[in-house]
Structure formats: structure tokens, C-alpha cells
Length: 594
Image (cartoon, rainbow, N blue to C red):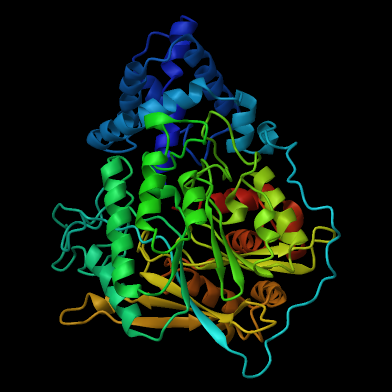
């Protein structure tokens, strides 16, 4: 999200003044504010040049080798944040207070050098950045079974309904009638709305950079409890609001316990299988690796999760959760559940050590060492596996993403479905055979958020699965997206009405929703502009930006949908984009993820 980017930019700039003390005269006698004013346009997150990046991180490297005073870093960081007008001074102070200890600790213990960092942040042309490039996950020595193309279930076969909730982002400070267009990173939390009457935040939510009040989330759960029954539910994380500059451990635990209790209240006895989102930590994305112990570890969070979710998960899953390794939800009506532990670092996402999406935490990047392995795919308990995670695989560091891609290829006959969230929008990521990059082998479904952040309707997803019977594939047969139309819900005298936005097969004219069908849909998007713009509308849960997505935007989006692994131009060649792959990647990185 925007705050995370600003804080990372702030962390880049903090040690620059140290270069002046290390090499007298490097900055000259001008006040700090003048240097910052000149740097402001150059050192943005999205327009950081290679040369500027090299200077920045060389300064960081040298400065922190000489002195690692948290207090000095904090003072400089507040000055930088204020002078560059990244946020109000009060927010700058709160953010620095929350992040300074982790930032200093990460820089001091970093295993990355300036060239590697700049390759990571700016692109491969600025340096070699993938420090895990030599890591390869160990696959079983047994040959891959013959590929059996998926087929529809026999007529009359039972089906199952799967509820998928992700990115609730409850904001306890949400105030109906408050300012939805504030200058802070998160709004609708107080302050008078400017403009005509009824310009304030709506009672049920708002089209702006706002999260949701608890009564909207509870209304959703009441609606679900009254509707047709589900056979199981997956809950993909990100519970707290986006006020990341002022969160405490108590705030995160309150969100965890409050929302877990609400799900138990309204969905019981339905089994709910949760995943950990990057926003569960404090500071946001702050999941130390397992070798960090004591107060700096994440034990406070994992222990609380194990306690809150003990009614849903078996004892062995709770034990692995306490270690921060995700969990296996056991076997349910013939399908095994594997919940990926999350990710580390990143442009808006991060988390426990399994994947680092275009970012880094400093100390060491995890991805090997057992955090991505295949035993869960070899269990005799069930012939098929559902993989559940928060951040989609293509958002991850190249090494982790490519190894995950290898696993999906090797076990395409075992992995029945992949489910993710995090981006807040409605999309998918394709996986192709590694030999030709042309035969579709799997699809990762990326469901839209419950929260409105940013400028969206609240929403949720329901999957129809091949049901429980001998020989079931347990694959996705169709899916529906439901929304709360805020324009209608916030109208005077109106009641909230959760309604179906679309059903996938019907909306896109698909015979089924197997990987080959989504691959064919991508090709149709390229040729059929009207169909693509309809997808753009659904992508934003029925509330798209005013500007349509054309040309460069379309090329970037189609490339992202086809790319189940990161930084691979080969996956986009079939789309024949008019822009170079590096430009397509740069455009898509500008998305506001959260």
C-alpha cells in the first residue's frame, strides 16, 4: 500500500546525512531541507533511477557501518518524511517510532549489497538481485505421472460450495459522516467532510481510501448465515485496517480475536481454514524468521492465532502454525488442505518466511530451508490438494516463484486448486508447462477483498467444487462474486443488499473453468475489446476507475494474468505486446496493492 511504499522510501533516505559525516563536504553546507527538496522528485518509489539507487544504498551501507543509533535514525527519518511531504508530521512521527528499530536492525544485519538491492528494486539492468538464484527445491525422484486432462464430473455428481473471504481490514475508527478525502493514508476516521451535504463517509462504507466498520462485516456474516449452506470456508488473511503508522500488538490481537469470534458466531459449525496475511504483523510485513526469538519474534501473534483458531484446526496444524510455517488443515471430504505460511518483505505484502515479493527484509531472505517443500503433496490421506495462501505466487521473489512454478508443474495431477487474495481486485494467474510455456496446467484464483480499500465495493467469493464422491477431482467448477453496492446501500432509507455481481462461466461464456478455459479467455480478451472492458469492470468489483484500461494498461494486465511466476518475459510473448517486457512490468508494478 501507499504507506508501506512511503516508509520504505523513508528508510532509503534516512542514512543519507551520514554520508556527509563520513565524507566531509559530500553534501556541502546547505541545510538538510534543501537537499531533501532536490531529492524529492528523484527518489520516489516509482521513478527511482539506477544511479540514484546506487548512491542511496551505498550511503546506507557506509553510514550504518559507522553508526547505528536508533535515535539519530529516527530524527532524520522524521525530517525526511516531513520535508518530502510524505505525510503529516504527526503521522511521520508515529510511523518512525513504530519502524525505526526494525529498520536499523535490518540494515545492520543485511546480507544484500547496494547493487543487489538496486537490481531488486529498479530491475535486472541495475544489478543482479536474486540472492536465492542457486536455490532449487528438491522434487521427488519418481517420474511424473502421465498427464490426464481435467474433465467435467459425471451428470448428477454432487457439488460443494466453498466460501472464500479475504482482506476484511476492519477499521475500529471508521466514522460515518467523516471525511473520506483526507490527506492521511487512511480516511473515513474523523474530521469533517468538505463539500455538499451527504459528502461524508457512508454508513456501510465509502468509495475512497477507507476500510470497513465492524457493522458492515457483521452484516455480511449475517447475510451468509441466512443463505444457502456451505461445505467449507477459506479465510485468506489481512484482518486489521491500513493505519499501519500507528498500530500496536494489542490492536492486531483485537482484530484477530474480534473477527475470529464473529466468524465462529455466524458460520458455526462450518469449518473455517485461515491463512496469515501480511497486515497481521506489527510493524506491517514484520515477520522475523524463525531463528529470531524473544520479544522480537512473532510468537506473540502465532500463539494468539493458534488459540483463536483451535476450534477449526487439528492439533498438528496448530503446532506448525505456532512455528510460523503455515499449516496443513488436514483432510476434508477427500481433499488435503495446505495453507502457505505467507511471504516476506515486499511492495505491499510480506510476512512469514516463504516468499519475498519484490522486496526485502534485510537480515536474510528465506525461501529455502524447508519453507517451500513438497511433502504436503505426497500425503496418502487424499489424492488431491487445495493450496491456500494470501499473496499470489507471481508477486513473489523470482527464486521462490520459479520453484513454486516447478512444484505446480510436477504435481499438476495432485493440485486440484489454488486460492489467494491480497490484491483486493478480482483476477487470476496462469501456470503453463515449463517445456513450451503453452499448455495450461493450473490457475491460481485471486479473489476480491471484503474491504473497500481503495475505491471498491465490498465483496466476497463463492466457489462451486466437484463434491465428495469416489473419483472426485475436487476442482473448481464455477465461481460467483458477490458485492454490496455502496451507492445503493448508503442511499437514505435503504437496507444493505449483498447481490451476485457475476458468475464466471456465464459472464465469460466458458464451457468450464479448467486451466485451458482461462487460457482461451486471455486470447479472447486480446481480440475482443468489449469483453476485456467487461472484465475490467468486474476486476474492480463493479466500481472501476473512470478511465478505461487501454493499450499499455491492457498489455500490462494481460501479461500479469498470464504470469504465474515473476519476472518471466517468456510468458507474455504469446500475447505479442507492443511494449517491451520491462515497460510492461514497470506499468503493472504501479498498481495499488495492499
